[in-house]
Length: 150
Length: 109
Picture 1 (cartoon, chains in turn yellow, brown):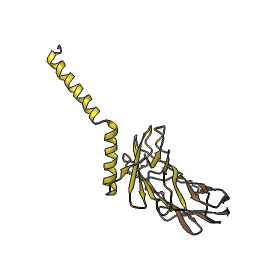
Picture 2: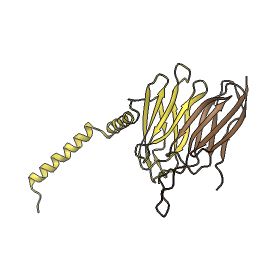
Picture 3: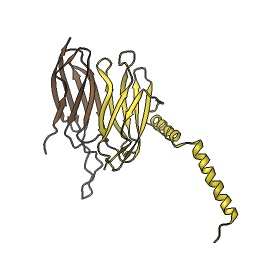
Picture 4: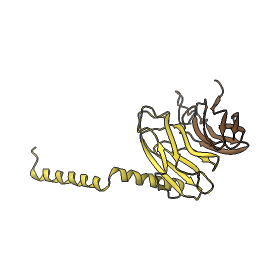
């Protein structure tokens, strides 16, 4: 059956509407909203995305069983300004809570390294709780080739 | 099966005020509770769920580990050398198992 001109016009319009939609709502803004909403649902409080908290993980990793993860927060770690704890979540894992690190001002530095399990490619989310109660958060996308939770 | 074996890498001395790094690891399956046997039975969860570091008797760093931590949990962290004293590293396992290692740190002025 030959494509009519009407059919070609309709499909062209749908295609450009979808393209325009993806420009208005780029994947990065959507992923950030998802992460912010996830934290609010999980912790019952709002966190702010912040560059002070660095979540360093490989963008691509061959196994989901031992994915390296480093966390650091720019903080003096004095009584006036310190990180109480950092919590890490893997929202796409069967059990989303990964680990929680607690620090003491003047005694420990807000910097840790470890290895975690990821079930599938996802945005790993970290939330730092500061001494004044502020929640800072960040996320990073990790593409794992195998399910580390199985 | 060999019991969980903890190991620590930490300097023997540091200058007062200096930041030093500790590497800790314990051999442990970290059974997530999500795996099944060939017969279809779920293997129960058994993990190290807590790691604590005390320095001169005070807790200076702590970790709550959940199922998504890898087997043989490796944790690297940094402390401030405040005074000479004992560092204790304690791992707590589901079911009550406790494993620990201690280290005497010399802090020079």
